[in-house]
Image 1 (spheres, rainbow, N blue to C red):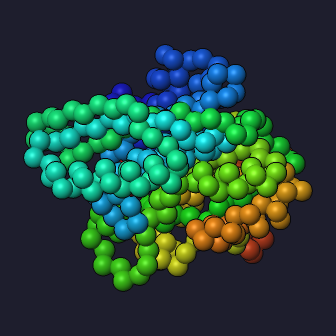
Image 2 (tube, rainbow, N blue to C red):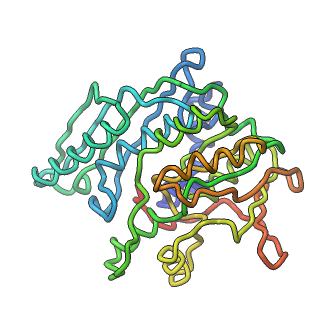
Length: 332
């Protein structure tokens, strides 16, 4: 690892993993932390606990803002462990001179998203720093949720599982890039930022046997699949033609040389479930407008342990590596 921190260390990919493993895990190592899940499972498997910080730029973008993002981010991490979000804390660092009106809009977005999750903020902290000490506003949210479905883990994936995505991928990353660069795109492209617990609850209520769930944020679907392959010591084979990507995201990727599988999402999850439940899971997810193109994209094998393979429609294949470098800093 380099001797100084670079933007790449926050990408959710290779450099980020190195930073976490070589610095934070080294200091804080324990059995709960080492499982590397979206949220910690505590209290004999009854509670999930997670924290996240949000520094997205711009603060307001098509489909959401930093406030909605902050609530969705933490609530979604809890949902990925089969937990119902219950209690959140909210800490805010505000730059001197920040607009009170903008702050009220951000807090209103947070309130709306909390109501969707039937969760409440029970504690918080506010700091105001001199102009230039922080870029406008940073938000941290920490959450506790009650686990409704036990045993979800990215360490237990096997050849009995199929791999799903809950919707088309890359919309958040593409939207942020377009907004940041001032790209004049006359389309309906917007961030997928959305609360995922309702979809997870529907899967649980339908009796779907869930092996693993992961919110595909920084590093995108590519990072999730590579982490799963390593954690469960399996090979994940993905059919490229089955990956749902909307035309707008495809266009931005082709224009700028991005890989849609590596773009960040904020309302898209990857799902590993038992093969016998595949069709039922599709039917459940398709009841949600935002998950209307949820689909099976791959399977689990032992062809190349700890690797992700991308199979093309022409019969060729290549390894899909974990993202490296910083594609888009301050994406969330």
